[in-house]
Image 1 (tube, rainbow, N blue to C red):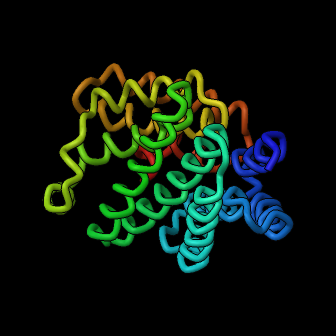
Image 2: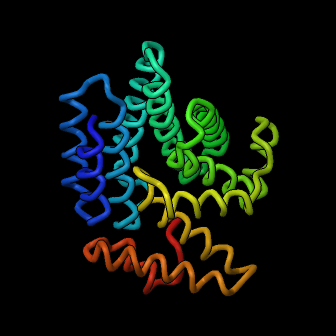
Image 3: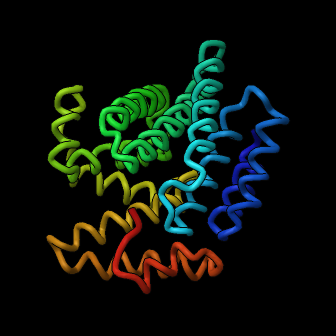
Length: 241
């Protein structure tokens, strides 16, 4: 899938046109049946739509099916990839699908599944970085991984230790978030959003970070004025889940 096609669909998501974005990527998934990008970002559009509706269960089964398809496509294509550039891109999309699956499982309180999917995400993204150390986009999932483990509930940390995921490092995560927010290509907007959410949470330990979080999201709201998720952050009690 061409970068321009991906950017066009992502722009629909961030503009708050979630249904249109889902349809856009669903059609691309049909026209490119071996490409993992279509189903993975069709799922992302539904995830953003659910967040806008404040409904964590919104079309959860459909999201699971799309992400399973995206991961399967990426794995199949990786087995046939002939060069490092293709393997890097496919490993990134494999990690993206697993990362979204981990998010969905955690929202449903399925910590064992969430931990397994997070570990698969980490492995895929680390493989991509081993092939191309300049893959800044690969850092976003790893930042979520590190931050999630560092700030997880006691039960989630216990499960992570049992499975062998480690304990996470919040400071390292924040640095990766910052790099993606500044230099990401495919993930820059989502990186800014997740970085702001992390900053807001860290403001419980350092109040100055709250203003930085609000500044970032204010910029997103100005760029994408029709997206209700950004506006709710600015006017509501705090960051989205």
